[in-house]
Amino acid sequence: MRFVCDGVEVWITHIGGYPGRYNPAVKTDIFKNPPGLFICGHSHILKVIYDDKINCLHINPGASGRSGFHAVRTAIRFVLDKGEIKNLEVIELEDKGKALV
Image 1 (cartoon, rainbow, N blue to C red):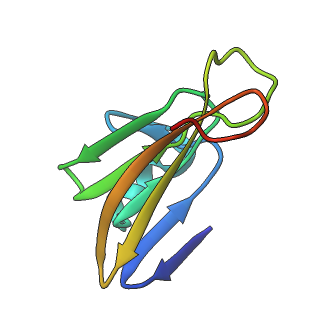
Image 2: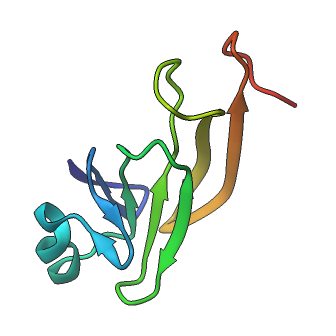
Image 3: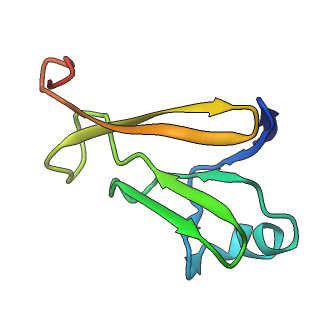
């Protein structure tokens, strides 16, 4: 899914890979028409990487579900403001689903 939110073009997909190892299903399009923010998952591994080859912030928020091989449940919160991505925050979730302080 691609859309624009507060001046940032966002692309969200399940399996997307990451800079240097994009999934073949998105690789051609991401280089031809890069978004400002690329969000994907599947690996359950939290990663935030700026891809300077295409001027795009890549975010994999990890995993917030209770099943899977991940040891810590995570989510990411950020602000889109007039074309800028800022105030990125990693949130670790307890087993009861409450955010850790």
